[in-house]
Length: 123
Image (cartoon, rainbow, N blue to C red; front, side, top):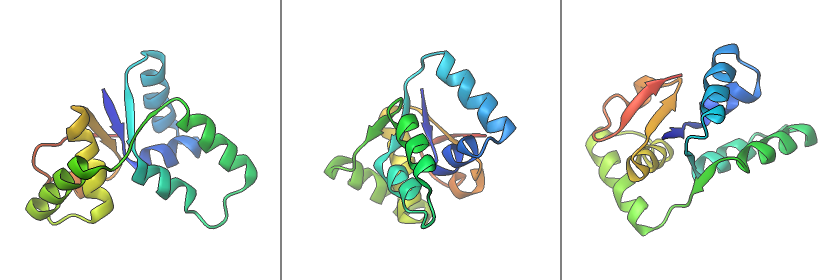
């Protein structure tokens, strides 16, 4: 099981060879793949998204399990943030991986290397 950091999806959508290879491999294996609703927010917050890009993001999101932020996840994220001093969005994404018992797949391993409890894999 995997949780995707926002950058993993961005690189995939841009056609980055490694990201496409890794994510397509996961998709073919029908493994549960999670994202935080924060990742959804970040993906749609780019100011110059074209209609085509919005459609591609929507199509991809339909294949993923989007985890909302509820009180339990917020408290877990606050714990992770207090212990590792990471930014709030990253703490919620890390908490999503911990909550789902999945590996966090990211290009920014350094952003998460101090986070307790989360298993990180570089994309």
